[in-house]
Length: 307
Image (cartoon, rainbow, N blue to C red):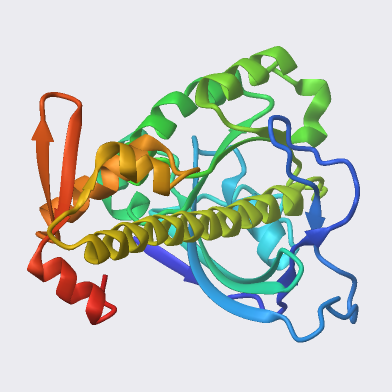
């Protein structure tokens, strides 16, 4: 069962407040909603759009639904809000990136029912396509922290390497605390995740953690695109060089003399890809030396600008 909530009418802007960030284990700075009527501090930004999926996971009663309600609608309900199946909330965020880029993010937040049987039943369906995970436990229940190991493992099997934050909720119940700072720190180290203590009741650090994840999703998307473009650049350079050399081709040492600054593994990986695509031929001399020539198909691709 999937229950959807209408997106909030208020667009939120993730921005640097200059305050000390509550997340431990990350170099991010804090982000929060601007005051009403505050203008965006950009002149004709380069606007890009991005759809993202964030999944909250953890045991029942840790406050996942309350965290989402606090972030999306700035509301809190004292009564226990039991999630049956999965609740999906949507919100639009404006995430600045660099000096002149503004990312308009449509974020879908999946709040998954905290029952083990349900987790095992739906993990392929609800974790698939997630770009970030928020693992939530209850500061007053040690077992809720211990249970996150299975939750996180099940999710990462589906999502692969995505940003993961450990959120210890109910910070307002400090007198009833059942988890020490050291126990939280160790769990965060095991899962290689930054952690933060939040309170859905008071709102403390709730926006910070959601906005920080949004920032990280944007940064990661840009990094992946830059890596893809850099890889494309090496590819183009290799093919253009080989097209100019014709049947003579290039030997291994010539590649590294010409493509200074490019790592050996990167060149080798690109040559292997080009050979699989039928654009180059690699002739090996022994175990470590080789020569490369371009194929007619590769030369045609260069001339047509399709490399």
